[in-house]
Amino acid sequence: MLAALYRKVGNGGFGPADSVLPLCGGPDENWETSVVQGYQDRIPPERADTWWSWPEGVVPVLDRGCARFACVDCHSDDGAVLLFEPNAISDQDPSRAWFVDAGSLTEWLVTWLDGRGRYEKDAVDGGFGRARWADAASRMQSDRATG
Image 1 (spheres, rainbow, N blue to C red):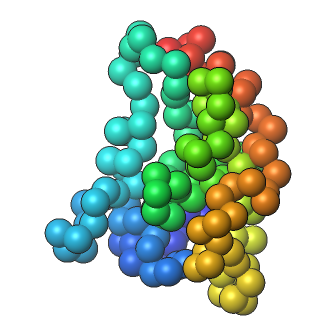
Image 2 (cartoon, rainbow, N blue to C red; image 1 turned 90 degrees about the vertical axis):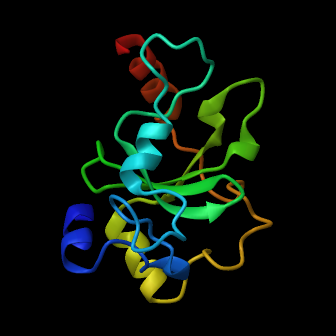
């Protein structure tokens, strides 16, 4: 479904706060990143000595500001939308930064279209009003083990 959005709707600039990131490059110089570049920037180099990693197949699609991103889990059947909230990291446990924003990309988009989303006014909420992504720790560890 994510690919269809980029093919049929446009290369970013739509969605909540008109802020869905462009897939590759930007429509103008005002874009800080794209989906592809944002994902590549968050994958540590092979055998890097780092305590964090970005789960494989989780791509940032919307910059929520303050280093927070709405992301699509491309490894889930329905394209679950996750919120990356770095302020929730504690004890160098990056898995604590991941929350479920919506069970599917469809649900996330319908919520936005219906005006029911938390996209405009939840700066104080962070990710803490959402359920944590239960698979974060295992996905991050299995990604590190195979990397």
